[in-house]
Amino acid sequence: MIPPRVAEVETSARENLRTRLLEQAPGLVAVVHDQAEVALVVGRLQPPLAQHEELVAHVDEGHSRDAAAQLDVEQAPVELECVVEVAHLEHDVVDPHETRHGLSIGFAAMEPAIELDGLERRYGERLALAGVTVSVPRGATLAVLGANGAGKTTLLRVLAGLLRPHAGTARVLGAELPRERWKVPGKVGYLGHEPLLYRELSGRENLAYHAALHDVGSERIEALLAAVDMERRADEPVRDLSRGMVQRLAVARTVLHDPELLLLDEPRANLDPAAAERLEPLIGRESGRTRVLVSHDVEGALAESDLALGLKGGRPAAADRELYR
Amino acid sequence: MIAAARAILRKDLRIEWRTKESVPAMTLFTVTVYVMFHFGLDRDTLDGELAAGVLWVTVLLAAVIGVSRLFAAEREQGGIEGLLLAPVDRTALFVAKAAALFIFLCAVELVAVPAFALFLLGPGLDGALPELLAILALGNLGVAAVGALVSALAAETRARELIVPLLLLPLLVPLLIACAQATEPLFRPVAGPEDLARWLGLLTLYDVVFVLVSVAVFDYLLED
Image (cartoon, rainbow over all chains, first blue to last red; front, side, top):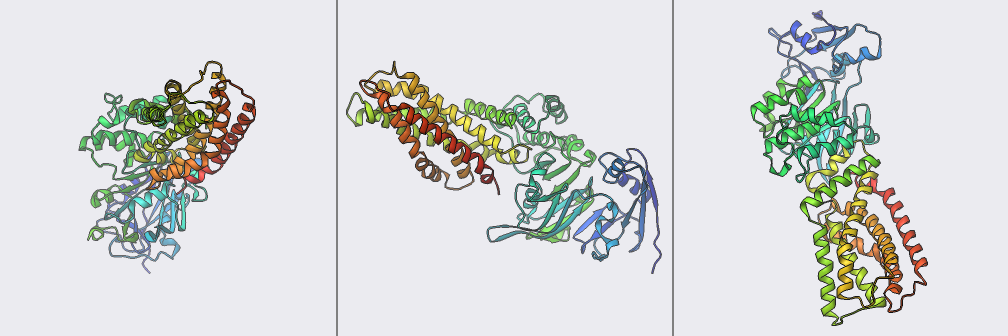
């Protein structure tokens, strides 16, 4: 039995646990869960830690959106021990049935934002999702990868409460779907293939409409129009705008109500690099929100995510380029 | 719920004002049908049962156009998803859609009824106008409640252009009978509103029943 090598990390007010972990162990590879189908990607360790080596983080206080830090809100500031199992993403398979190897260990003290266990969804006879199991801690980003028709969008729609799961269990922000679906609206920002904007209305009118549905004040609309750089074109009908502009408005619509969870389906589609960069504070990692990110950009998605879920034919698969072959 | 319904209604009216998809089409349809009756029946004037029947059948057929388009923007531009993602009572959507259809019907009748009087109606409407307005209001309310329900039901189906008339018109038969019977005395050469209260009562009952049924089942229509 190899004695565990332990590193301790302490974070203080508004420091991100993840950032501190990376400072302490800048090459940390991943936390592997359930036969490498899901991985908490933290960074890359040179040289990598051996299997069963551990990294222990002590968190005093943190960012309000940080999964670990939220514990401090509910309890007196205590040392939260975050144990992160380390393994090679592609080579080492950690026994998921051994509790200390579970993905949730790193954020065990928090209820995950998303918990799926054997999720299944069909369209008629066709199985769109099967056996999807994943746990996403609050504040983490899950990258969902897969070829066209792999079930990525279906997964997002199930998480948004737009589709009901047909088997397995699904918990989103503490709400069990579909029984407690009513708890989800308002907490989720969904950016899908469709912008969910009315073509005949202007950007400002669209945002005002969604603001009314979410009981959000008009000052938030103006702030978001500025954030997505759409102030000058905000009064033109959406049908007259370019696809990139519509996508920027769709992002503003997605975060209008300051959702805890972002469900992003190719969020940078149609955006030029400058626009994509501009939207980072709203939908990127620095937003501090829990995110589920669907993308075909494997390297890009993995780089900005903590976990990765590959889907092939609706079933979990290793999150790598093989998904597209 | 009221604030959400108001927001949805305001949005629907704004879109209709800009696209002019429903109300002009419904209005043109009614006027065209009255002109066709005018020439088809080869009569300059109608009165009594025939006049009431022509007025209401035409209005209800025009309503089919409005009902078919009622959820078009939601269906084509993801509006239903936007609503389902908001913490809004789904009843707000029904209330807003029914209110929008009610307003559309009223707008259509502002043109259709004078056109009907001009092309077909023998007796004048001067003395019977308040009663006719009451019947039209109750009739529109019933059409709006049933229409919003049917439109939501058909919205996610492929053959919605078929489903809307097939579902809507049979459900509107009791309303048609009540409206035509209530209107008929007003269109007699010598007006006699002896049965008006009875038919208005029936119309009110129809409206109450269908509003309640629609509110009760509307949630389930939006379920996946």
